[in-house]
Length: 354
Image (cartoon, rainbow, N blue to C red):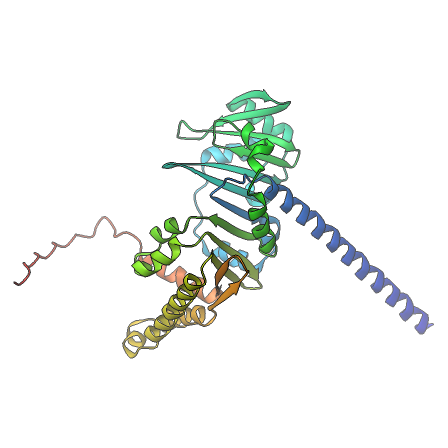
């Protein structure tokens, strides 16, 4: 009797495991399909593409830590009204989003493909009431003003759970095949390379902009020169339990450029570790803060990758809860002084000695 009971339990457990596995495989296939759908709409002439899989990110412990750490912004009244009328809240209902950035001189335009849990009827009613509706190639194009500006956002439903939107005057050009013509294979190969990352950015031929926006302490003529020679830059994040693994990669055609950039980054890491281990730094820096910075540096790895036509430099590091806690403590110190504080008179500058 006991033997039969154990056999039945074993069969039940096996069936449950099989069903769980099949359910996971089905979810994985659906998730990959949704991911591919939004990325397939990205225009080939984009300067940058950003992607986020919120469905996966919401399940990651690190994202919970990050959400608890980040300051909570005040709810915008217009957005609160939007949630009330449409039932859509991006924190809960947004599943996948891909955003393409196109530069046009000093300006830039955005195009996005969004997958989520939408109430199409309620969202359409809200857009019709607050904006305008036109017809384009059999599609309803909604145009709604952006709060506080003269700018408008246009969007259309591609499916009940799939929306395309842009701040460009013509949404239709992004839905045509011409926008996804030559050069799309280059984007696709990098999207496939980043398939394991729920959040990433791909930048094409924009090294100069990256160098210009680097923090003041990280700027240098040598670094700027090397970044200017990069043809592609990718930045990806993958939560792993309580930490976030970040992978940055720059691609260029020259072996010498890749070697110099790798040597420079390794040198920066070594100098940073040496500085943190300096006796003066040990006395001046909070031990927990110093330990968090050292933990970040020890997780850092710089390597070179040869893909034939392109040579890449890869930088990998981990952001841990300890680092987030350090950032939480440092942030208040960076706040502006209170209105009651009296500014001190600036010292008079001395004339330089001859």
